[in-house]
Length: 469
Image (cartoon, rainbow, N blue to C red):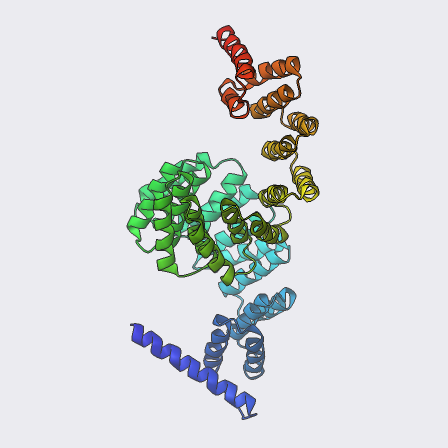
């Protein structure tokens, strides 16, 4: 079987070379439409779209009524992002072959890209009249609704696709996304289990059930589901990757690393899998190895921002702050709105003494999301460590205005007020903190080493405990 496939591949490549030699030397050429389709498919498969466009135009000069060649030209134009031209090709192909479902689907896809959602939906509904692959057409209609954030209608059509074909992997995945957007993710578990009951050997159903549990932060159940998917298909590389991510969340770093390495073995290198392996080594505190994998990731994709970010974190762990700043800046450049990137860069700038830059970055992070209390805690700590307690107090008070129910902010304010000598005010704030979340009071003692101060706080905490027991 493998030899037969290789033989066919070699024959097509020979045909492509023959076509190129003849065109280069202005030799008269004529092939039947099927041969041209093979040549053009080779160009498409090898991402040689500009050469492929010239070839398909030449082929159409000889076979102008071939709808299949027009479809190939449309695919090339889509790859070149010439969507309006692609649509014209497809409409011409449709006039030649009005019942070809693939033409309907491609027209629908292009109209979605162009933002013509209602027209896309109408076209795809027409496709249902002729299609033998109604699961795929329903899926495409779902995508048209999803593109305009109509997640409820999108879910209905994704469900239609799954009911026709339980192994429609994309429909299973996109349904979970839509249900997450509508807040119905938890209620959907029984829906996926119903399909598993009907077909317990559907690795895709188990895989997507695992994804739902992962999003619901039920990592043990996610692991169980991914393991079932792998038991059915031992070469399901994405299931190994997601199993690795679940283990990472549960701090099972060695298991996580093994899963990621298995995925690498099955699928080969990619920036994503190298970055995942790097994160596992990072949490295993093997920073030199983690750096090596992040560098491999970046070598494949120089725009893979996540690897730049984690490379910076690895260097921070080695106290290489200046080097870390370089990579945090790279990550930030590729994603200007990512708060984690901004905060990491801000803290690194603070550590090397660049206070002005650090302040600007923390201000930017709070401008993007004023309710992110963790940013306020970090930002205030910078001023606190620098001896500007009043500014630290001001930041935390602003954060409490944004997130009045976040007890950790009140406890931090207690610490700052006590350091500023405002004992009465700090006790009042402590009582508010205790009423919001009593158990969080232990964070106080990480900041306050002074025994006398601790004793005063313990008395208030004990009084509160007695009063509310």
